[in-house]
Image (cartoon, rainbow, N blue to C red; front, side):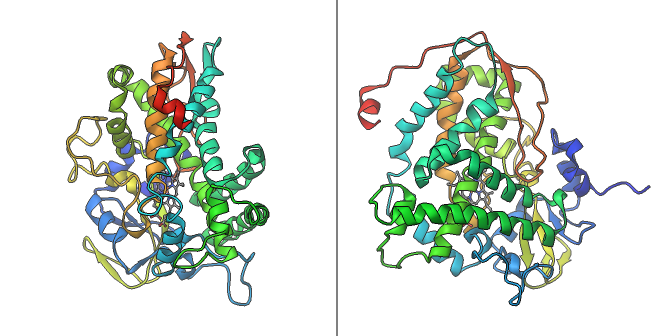
Length: 419
Ligand code: HEM
């Protein structure tokens, strides 16, 4: 029997807990051709070049095996803007960004921080009187999901409904769950169901002057006009999904790493202001998004001595690039003190993560609180059980034990007024 390729071994669930030695092997050939015809790129310099290359498309309709045609157009919603190229991508991103961050709405995330601290406080309070917990189900999942629901204006109590749809869309990007046309069909069908739900919310919002993003977008009157209804619905679904699993994994991967590096955990307990550096190093060392499988070559592209042919799918292994020793020294050491930490955790180029400021803020709030309040925190099993997905990689559960729950810190006056 022939040995599976390094890329196939990375996709294999058996290697989910520690894919990093395989990434080291993969980087020996910066661009390799996988059995399914994709070109797998694993070194920092080459990944960055392709992230910025206009000959590389994120529009899946450019793939020769895209399942829908003009005669059979699929369930009807336009693609997510993450799956569009400029200029369409840029127009939608600008319209959404007006309600999410600088320059139009610079205070959106900052104004949410005291509310976020309160959500974290309540979740940790609910562990009082206990000595064990699953920190994925009890903190890492409910925290960012509550925040994204508040931001978008999605009722928190509907979570069981849209969790199943979000899980469905995420499963469909996992290359181990079927060939591309089958997964794309499944993803579009689930997205249409999620879109129908968001459409109902948008219609209800039209008469209500709320301050959440959905209400603002529905009543938008900016210089570039308003998103068409289909664009609004599909992209709100994208934000809801993107605000789910990724940040959950950053928090869970982060706690796991801190528990494996107890001296860093102790420093964070004493100096919560270290959390920004720690979160940045986590995004490099244990990134929630390990690879991007969504790119297609629009022309023949020469990279590191290999020609990626027109129409070929390209896989960018971000997690391998962020540990490339030609880019960063001692890449396999978790070192929040490293002076330079340029990583690929949020991607790069025109599709650089839209939610990065939110995700960073959430992780910077929750990690110091957990290590401060859960006394003598320890892992129950190492490695913990992982989710199946090789792209959005993280523990499914994080069982921990602790001796007690320290009281929440009293809110300072400024925080109380903002809350
Ligand atoms: C730690 C958490 C997160 C990580 C690691 C992460 C990572 C990424 C990465 C790697 C990309 C680039 C995808 C590509 O180039 O194809 C991306 C794009 C994106 N992310 Fe995130 N993300 C996180 C959290 C969030 C959150 C909370 C939101 C929503 C508020 C979000 C919304 C998006 C969107 C909409 C895009 C597409 C941007 C575009 O195409 O211009 N992300 N993210």
